[in-house]
Length: 102
Image (cartoon, rainbow, N blue to C red):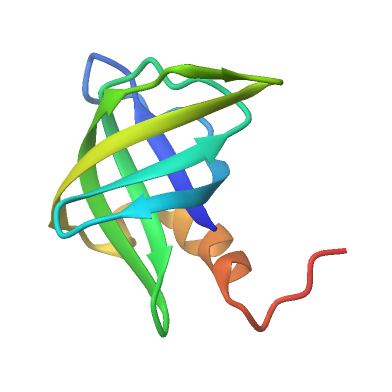
């Protein structure tokens, strides 16, 4: 799983974060399956790898897959500080394989 927080076009207003499931992962991008469309271009993506890693990126595509799901393709550009995203930081612990979802 990953955690996404999109930003509105004004580059200052952050939307509510959502959880998604990783579909493809490459050196400079990721595709995820989410239960909602993301029309915003800028996004923070949190991936778990022995701890949360916060990455900034741009949404490149968001086609509807049907059944209430979208494939969101993102180009990731840099690692960012978790200190700049307190809500994501608190939610990121849910990505750990050690956490049980009830």
